[in-house]
Length: 289
Image 1 (cartoon, one colour):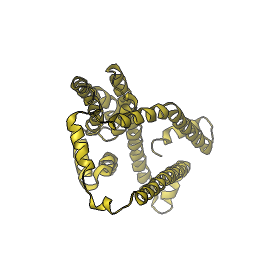
Image 2 (cartoon, rainbow, N blue to C red; image 1 turned 135 degrees about the horizontal axis):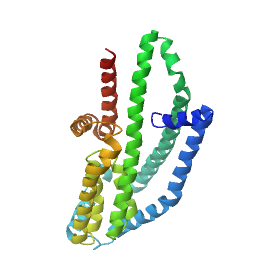
Image 3 (cartoon, one colour; image 1 turned 60 degrees about the vertical axis):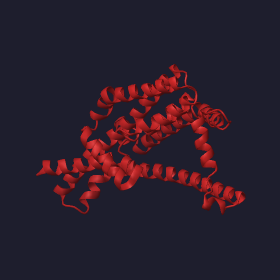
């Protein structure tokens, strides 16, 4: 809601009804997702299938990989030995089915709540005044608006950063003539959501793939990801994130460590927005005093 509200209000200033403006933005998002699904997903799926198939045949990986795979296959795990292949397949199918429908329902619920939050956002002042004194209600609106502004800027900046890193990675892997450049670059874009450690994690699959081809190509891939990471830290992040959010690197790293320790990956993802909210609320309260 914080990310989409500025666009909705700009359309509303053009005398477009708020509900129609929200619907227009939703249609635009759906068209973008449809374009991504039609243009990017088919080649990505094909390349991913080829990637998996290239790992399966014997001799396609270095000897130490084959030894690791053989060790894993020979493990006699008690839990798996008690499940028949048929029963295991049924359980897997049910889990996948429930996961898919759960994801669809969650996405639809998110869009629905966002729609109503955007629609009712203009009534926030009246809502607060209904159970708070007028002066406190005005302060509450100012604080919420500041929080929304920073959260929206963080969301849009993070999305833009993911796109930029994905494009850089795809161009670099294509220049190096690395197979499966599209899925590997999409992995890099997705892991960019996790600040600082995301680029390191996203480099692992690319290095493993290239190591199966030649050590020289793997080394070149490592250098490529190091260069992208340095360019990101020196040029991209300062221009995309620091200007719109304004958190220092020390605070960012500390927040990631605390969030990751408390809640794992989810905590790392939520740590920066939580810090932004706390920092903004404290600053506004001190400013009002």
